[in-house]
Image (tube, rainbow, N blue to C red; front, side, top):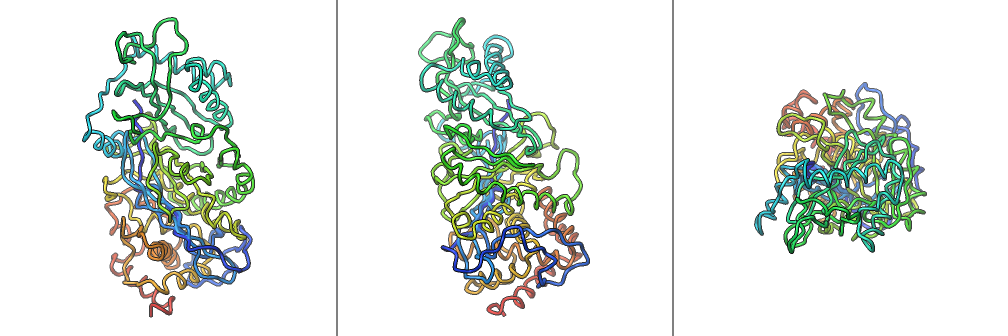
Length: 556
């Protein structure tokens, strides 16, 4: 069975925003070539990459590993562009269940996992009652359910709506699946198929294995829980027996996989946008698919080309400076973005019953584990792609400088998504063991402000003016994703500055290699710093801290 996982250590959020932008002059979003800026840092003899225009102020924090958030706060007024809030905190990785956190900071990894995330979720379920799971055999009941799911696959490929809804019970279930079908046909699929999984507490788990063309490196899996009619007699339908003969409408209810209390089991990436919305609006660009509810189509149509430019910028930077692929592991092929203004829906997309609301989170990137097929090393993750969700009620979307704000959050979250496929571990359930939060969030901030060093220095001054600085690189977990907006924003800003400082001394390629290495082998952190800088960690940190103090008058 293809397990469902959520890798949350890399969940990336954006730095908190402190309000509404001031009356400064908006800066045109894709303008500001890095060459025209007066670099505040001494530049290494390295070719500069095209600029990645981003709001002058730090964006929200994100989490250590996978899901990454974008902050929602506006810093003090700057001459050219207003700063935007930070991102949210990281979310845990899930394997077949629930898992470690990844925030806007780096990469939100939503994965169908059978180990870490699943372990987390299943650990929780186990405290109530161990789920009763049984694998289906290809003969008997299993073979019959394979025919049902194969029918869905063929119907979508043929764009045959009536064939698709045939197995669903008349009434609300059939009509909802009719809407799902109409949403699915709007998306450019490389792969899209349904497979029966196993029975769990009387449900039939069904995997929707899919790969978005130009976006996902490998197929990923969304997992459904079906309530079905059974050929077996008795008070509770048993999917193991297969559907009753001669009956077409055998699926009575469709949702996420539930535990024995009827609550979301915490894995499976359900609901996806095609499940959550009655009618999807979809825009496709090169290596980019952006969608929203049809009622928010005006926002989608306004933002899509700004996001497409952000995507092209990030991909060009990775192609120029990123390390060569290793086996099945390479940077993301493209990006999948959902725009949502309703916070309840935002918190539920891909997360079942929903996650606790983080008011400082403006956006999140969720890495998703690859479905069965591609092989990673023993005990290693293989990420198939990411899903980015952005809250369009934040100042990045609503201010008069919205183009800069959308560019900013786009480059930030997409940077998380680019490196997500390099993850080899979801880390521990407590968020430890994955990439350092300052590395994942710092890379997203570094990418967002590439070519805008003078603006980055303005942000550093603004965000550190009233926040203590101890000369240390930002910590992990709750320390990084602080509940205090000023502290979280400072952590995002310092992290981006540390990588910008590294690039100024040793070149952009060293930064990309360092970040890639940290995602692949998180435990080798100190050796990776030395490989990038030629210095022990303590020496690099001291040099960077001296730079911060010299750049920020309030810290001298």
